Image 1 (cartoon, rainbow, N blue to C red):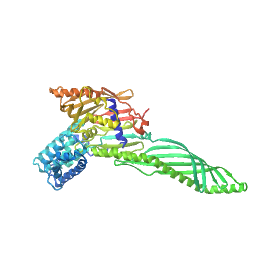
Image 2 (cartoon, helix red, strand yellow; image 1 turned 90 degrees about the vertical axis):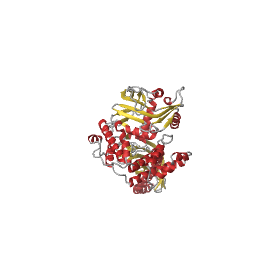
Image 3 (cartoon, one colour; image 1 turned 180 degrees about the vertical axis):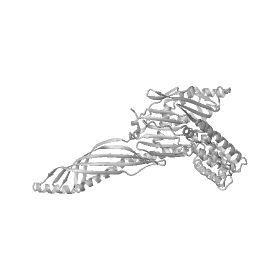
Image 4 (cartoon, one colour; image 1 turned 45 degrees about the horizontal axis):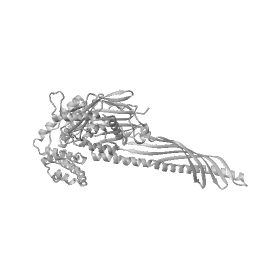
Length: 621
């Protein structure tokens, strides 16, 4: 993989965590892989007729999915064409309340959504496709005489997949499990068995941890400033100069169900002033202790904040007095001294209140803009786009300890599995850690890329929109080669396979084009060994890039066709540039205000057989 492409991957991983940032302890699970290894399924429930309530629920979910798609098509110039293509009258009729659905019509509608036409990969189409398929499963189970036999076959396949996964401890062996569980749920069968198996494969598959000091680098600063004093206290005009010295600090507050971050201000103001009233001028030294706190709260819904809390206490001492009078100076001085002593507590209280109000107003003004932007970005750049694309995690929890801000997430749709073991430990020296399970990559890629066609023009447009730069050379066509495109496989289009000390990446394309030429399905995979190198980490490619048709076994006697050989040659030339033989991982460049804390050298890169990959960055020396 090209160094710059890998750096972008690092940045994406980090930015995903910065809007939230991360770790929680895994909740206890009713079932684990070891338990399934001893008793793969246990007693399985008998087939049972599908209830009217289950059918109504499936129809209701389909109607709920149709709504957003209808809204999208209503604003699209091609909306009417899409409705004709998708046989909209039949679709809405099948979802109508009280109507007895026809499984044959539902399967025909499902095939239209699965045709691979460009645009059907959009989230709104995918949601309807899934809902149609689920309704078809429910009606099949209710009306098909062979439904009981189909159920028995699925249970048998599920038992075999669970046993294989429990024996090997790898994600690959468990690949059929998600789809089988989804079909059992959709046909309202074996709820206890489904719940038990799901509990073993529904652990969080993303953990992120950020040290307080890393985020503090963008906030923490010293205050050292002078300002003139010009105010009235108890009818006396006070003038002079004040010098404030203190600190603004970021502080994590322990919280189990959300992240709580305080921005605190603590300072001391030393002032030298003179106040004149009548013939008396009093010179004073003052000490005012100031503090303020702005509390920020982050959860899976929003970023919010509480009003600034401020405190101030003032104390003064008289350093001199002058009397502008030719007569009665002693008497005036005596009376002024007594009056000053009487009024001092009240004057100090008023001065403290003024200082408190001033600090509260200034600190609110200084912090509110940045917090408002963070709250807006959380919705517009994180939460809303992920929801619109179907990428938002099914589970997202954020918390803080004394020194860590953490989040744990699980992304897995009903026909996908998540992690099935606990993640590796975090190196305590890391200031930033990301632990992801290979199911996260596979699940997210399936949602984002499954069945989607990407052209060279698409990639160029994305590169220009996101970075303003030209398309990287590894993705450009050679002068003697026409533009290219790839249609990703519907299932597992991009997959990471983690092994002990090794990571393998596979890209599955169901169709390729080069100019006017069209080529069949081909899988592209490459593996890297993780090796230490002179105080850093590098990836060393393990052999050549492997490019073969799905299911092809090199050396197994089968031969490639002429078209496959031609495509293989084109892909080898292109992906040989992308996947470099040696990749030295450079320190991570941080963005925005966090740039002052970087670049961060990589401290930890661990890959395990159970699918976990742990990445960690240490503080800059």
